[in-house]
Amino acid sequence: MSELVVFKANELVISRYDLTEHETKLILFSVAKLNPTIETPDEAQRTVIFSCSEYAQVMNLSYENAWGRLNSATSDLFKRSVELIYPSGDVAKRVFNWAEYAEFNRKNQTVTLIFSKYIVPFLFHLKKFIKYNLEHVKSFENKYSMRVYEWLLKEMSQRKTNNANIEISLKEFKFMLMLENNYPEFKFLNTRVLKPITKDLNTYSNMQLDIEKRGRPVDALIFQVKLDKQIDLVTELAKNSSNKNSDQLSFSITPEAHLHEGLRKTLRDALTAKIQLTSFESKFLHDMQSKHDLNGSFSWLTSKQRTTLEKILAKYGHI
Image (cartoon, rainbow, N blue to C red):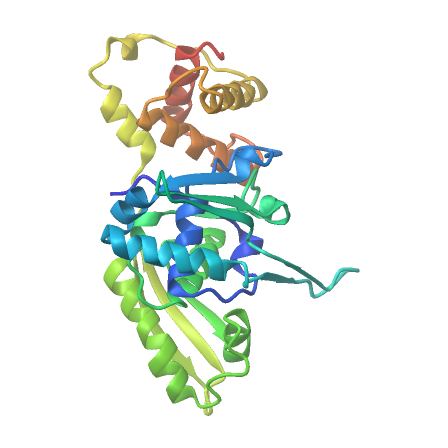
């Protein structure tokens, strides 16, 4: 499975934008290559450089197909905007582009994409966000499937459940997908949007979905969703470390502020290549940072999680 993980602020998840299938996959692939823990990224840190061959491999495309899709999707991306609507407050709406610069290198066969500075708050140093593995969504065939997948993931994350019935008015749903002027008859929306979305999520993702309609005429949709439980990184790390003598060491309880500072320093050192985390350690530490940002503390830590975290931080001299 691909180790590329997508992080997005909840506010961006429910924003209004209209991307094609190929533009969506380009954005997701690029977002997954960013480091979301950076607080104030400079231009270099919001720049993504990747080869056509890497993109082709991750997306299961031929090299020729990948290059053609990247070429057209990157150019068309500059015609698309993100629209944030604010129901209250002084600011009614904010509109900005995804990226500010793109480059194709013919010699190296690479693509460079620089994300817009205005999208930084929604991709970096996140407080309320969703995250998912690119593997779960890269094969979607309908351009609306990704929007609905992310929206459902946000709703379930906020409810802290893997199984839910999520209701939304038909008007709100169409507004979110920028379809308010399309499909006045429900049967066409059902055939061209809802059924393809259901097929994509049930076939390719880690979600099982059934969509029910309500009202005559239809005025609401009920999304019956079941999400596969994600792999527990702590459990995997424990298995990975079970044969190491270092597991026999004992660690005292570290004050929460000291623990979080050690976590930040370790991730920062990894980012600047001062240390090299194992793939497993990197996943675990980013997961701990994400949960801390979401909850504002380490109050949710289990004893196993705390012990594992302290061991990794001690290994790199940060507690």
